[in-house]
Length: 93
Ligand SMILES: [Zn+2]
Ligand SMILES: [Zn+2]
Image 1 (cartoon, rainbow, N blue to C red):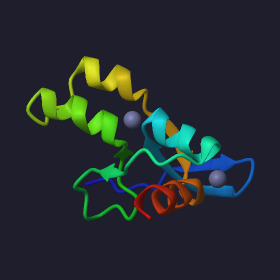
Image 2: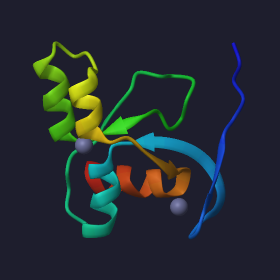
Image 3: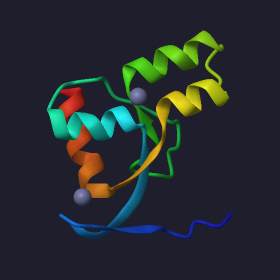
């Protein structure tokens, strides 16, 4: 298994772990509105791919499988690890 870490350069936080979240979670950082927080079952990754409740509903419509429709709805976006932590805190509180 290749566990090469990937980094992203955040304008606010500098070099950070690269994480992937749905665009609604990114938006929530801007608006401060809670959208829910769900994440992939990935015990090796302290910051697994994450998405909001609306995306979770989409995925449940197709039996819990990510398909083209839910993926395009999610519009997964690269986010820095520190921003990820902030989104997680905001949406889980
Ligand atoms: Zn979403
Ligand atoms: Zn950041």
